[in-house]
Amino acid sequence: MLALGVMRGFESVVTDKIIGFDTHIRIEKLFDSGFDLDDEKISEISEIPGVEQIFRIKKAEVMLKANSITEGALLEVMPESALSQLYSVSANYTTGESSQSGLIIGAALADQLEVALTDQILAYDLGSFTDQMGLPAIAATQVQAIYESGMIDYDKSYLYCSPQTMEELFPDSPDTDDFGVFLTDISLTDEVMNQIDQILPYSHLSISWQDRHQTLFNWMKTQQLPIFIIFSLIIIVALVNIASTLILIIMEKRTEIGTLRALGTSRKRIRRIFALEGLMMGLLGTLAGIILSVILAWLQTTFGLISLPSDVYFMDKVSILIGVEDVIGISAGAIGLAILSSLIPAMQASHLQPADTLRDE
Image (cartoon, rainbow, N blue to C red):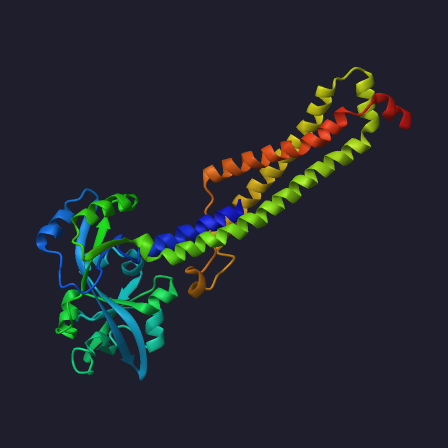
């Protein structure tokens, strides 16, 4: 139960952070065709049931310099209304007192550059190298806000600003607009994407948040297989322990079993006695397991006893998520397997002959 809770908790936390770090659907150009979405198509997409907001996203590869330190990052430009929807960013950043526009950077990137709020920073637009005879566009700006999403790799790599700030910094930046789409319900992603694909011209493609982070989700699924195999082996060991315990009990109770058989107790009743004993073992073990699992999960959730490096696992502590359906399913499975493991000893006990057991005494 704890193993499944850890897997579900990890997947839930990572999924929640990824969703809060990205738009639900991205519309990107397949190649530099020169075609763009006109207002009519944008209006059609916005009228699809389930679409909450569609907006332009401009991306730029930039080099940041401060305190003689240089770092590269990906700048994403989007309206403030859209940025507020990225709750992994907007819900976890602090702003300075200055009303001047600037860049919103991650805490990990700020640490690398050794900058704080309102500090001055130089930004180089790397995409302008080819447009200006190898000389990049350079602009001075400030750190408007610092966010901390808990995913260090993302905090190091992504920074944000408004379209107005981008226009002030790099007015000659080429127009390479993507489009972001937020939905009222994320479960409608596939359905809405199918409708968007019917509207888009051939030069554009819609990509969901799952597709954009497919490698990460594939990695999580891969990690589940060895965990499943290991705990299946542990369950097999537990079943063998139950069966061997009952066999030892039968060996100790040979005289009592023989006496019951001599007094006319049926084989069916003998089998039932030992099957019920296996059931009691399963019930007691399951109850103890549930209590221990819930207590340990509560302690971990409340006090964070087991910590993790956030730059590897996207979280700073182990997250455990135990659902009611998991408790019911695992408990029923454990009790059922305990009964099955007791059938062989119960059959063995029912086939003991009264004369043989009493003769041994």
